[in-house]
Amino acid sequence: LRFLNDMARGCEEHSGSYDLRDNFLFIHVGSQVLVSLVLNMEVTSGSFSMVAEEDSEDLRKDGAEEILERITDLVNKTLAEDGSYNILLSKEAILSAIDTGKSEGGPSGRHWVLDPIDGTKGFVRGGQYAIALALLDEGRVVLGVLGCPNLPFTSVSNLSGSSSGDQTGALFSAAIGCGAEVQSLDGSPPQKISVCTIDNPANASFFESYEGAHSMRDFTGSVAEKLGVQAPPVRIDSQAKYGALARGDGAIYWRFPHEGYRETIWDHAAGSIVVTEAGGVVKDASGNDLDFSKGRYLDRDTGIIATNKQLMPSVLKSVQEAIKEKKQASSPL
Image 1: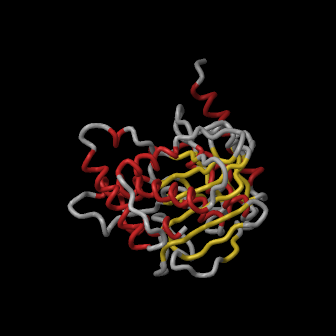
Image 2: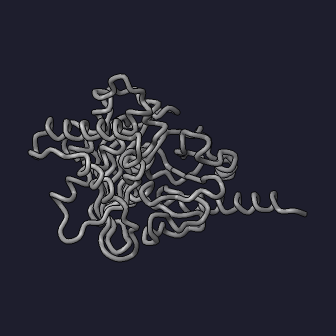
Image 3: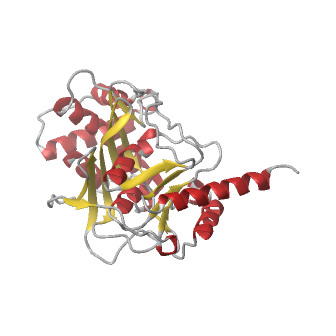
């Protein structure tokens, strides 16, 4: 968890003459390298399997030498500053560490699931992003951690995902059967969290993606209208939405990507267990649990909904009505 925090905060120190998009590449790949390294050395017994977003193919191509060198320097500097491991990684060791994330996952065995930086545009924009790590055991998520460096520690209170408080940075964690917790990134004692208890949709607020291209806002607007939701949407990037929902900042999080988009397991594994262990529920649009046993992609129907147990029936009903109306409107007479 310390390395997740160090890498998340290290991007500005290593920016040099590079713009934020270049910085994103360095920190994104560097984060995956460090998580892989620490898991291999500290918590893995037997064979190691990780499902992650990056592989080394592009970094092995001609012309990528400078980028690989910068990533190698960033990782080694982070290791040296932390002091926990007296090692120096070569470029080839960096490439090998990246490729530990090429597992396909599946229903058997244990697989770590990592998104080194979830919320690309949020990171580049200086908004919300998350470092998300989960553990699958026989196809079931049993552990999840969300590091959210820019998320207000107390609560999200407006459309930009900020609050009036000064403290930012939240680390969410959950283990199956043990509940969910949050702590600040400075190492404060963890606090138990739970989803809100709102049971009237009219009093609910909902989270959705900051980027309009990531969700069908006309559709979610229709669902909100059917539910009678009065509050405007809170739009923030990344799985930080799962963390905010789990501690009761809002009542509903839904995600309805455009047709043809395939959800990856690393975009939801950590966040989903944080919500469920905080007393919430996470379903697809048909009311099924998310299935993380199918490999690198979720086998899900239409969209993803996270809320409390009181609201889920009415949310599902409104979603399914809106889906039916959408299909009827698009069908030829």
